[in-house]
Image 1 (cartoon, rainbow, N blue to C red):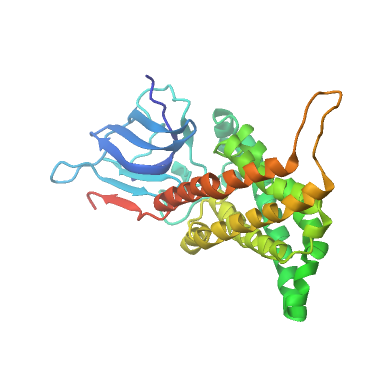
Image 2 (image 1 turned 90 degrees about the horizontal axis):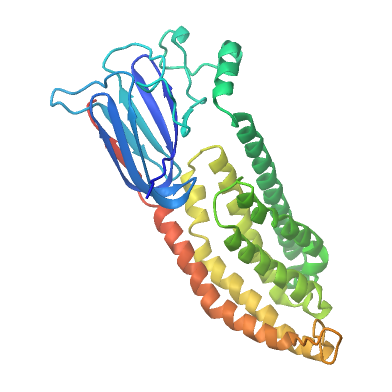
Amino acid sequence: MVIPSPFVYWAQSSNSVSLKIDLRNAETPNIEVLENKIKFSAQGVGAHGICKYEFSLDLFAPIRSSKEGDQCINVKVYENRIDVVLDKDESVWWPRLTAQPQKPAWLKINFDQWKSEDDGGSEEETRDVMKDYPGMFDKLHKEELGYRKEDYKKVYLIIYNLFQFIGFTYVMSVMIVRYVKLDYASVPGTYEHVGGAMKFLQLMMFLEVMHPLFGYTKGSPLVAFLQVGGRAFVLFAMIEAEPRMQTKPVVFYLFAMWSLIEVVRYPFYIAQLYKKDIYILTWLRYTMWIPLYPIGILCEAIVILRNIPYFEETEKFTVSLPNEWNFAFHMPTFLRVYLLILTFPGMFFVMKHMHKLRTVKLKPKIIIKKCK
């Protein structure tokens, strides 16, 4: 069995080499440095999903050792990456990272920290490579195929997440302002005032099913479809299709739960795209679900339950025999089965999945330091 390698982004100064290992949720990585060779292995989430990743690199020159013979290495494990800094044995610029001229496909250049020998070895300021060294920048781009494409993906994802954040903030703001002005009398008119915006935002969320298919984000398209599709079913088939349900108080509470979740989730994604670890945002993202998810699922279940007699009366979406397709479908029976699956197995699966993510995301960062 071939063990995949994670993407590794490298940069250097005159005194050190930095490696950024693109591996999320890494479980206690094993890193060995032997003079001019580095070995890495860890379980985590990378380009091949959740599995074990490893790599080995023969470095261009030796790494500095302490008096005890240990290699000088500084490792910081974050939720979305692993940073490794190696002290060079001699303060010289390396023409490349590896001893061999051939570069592995998974080894990339870290443009955020890239410096040149012409910088004079400055450790305090990161130079603008595009401005100061345009020729070098174009040369590096030729080696890093797809770099500009990755930039376009990032810009698109930032715009999408920002748009959704603004949209759900608008929905929540309208609901709050109306409640402050009219008190409980505003509740029956919730769908009339924000239903259109909520429907548009929900349709936009189907893009999140396409993102992992196109490689824009990591994750399972099936899981994303089940989550987005479940909401769409409640919104369009249960609320939009039955006018009597639109004035029920449960719609107000359901929209409030959805909006509260999203006004935290989308800024969290934007921060991740900028590789910013904002602890309060991460904590809210993986803590707010504890009360909000059960309440939201309960509200969805109430909507479905209250719709059963309405659909028995109107026979909407029900297909009766005989017909040319020789097919029968009874919507109220489907709703009862759907309700049974949503309330018990569905809630258990969602809560278990989020608890696992919370355990991983909020665990303390692992910092390994040697040879100061």
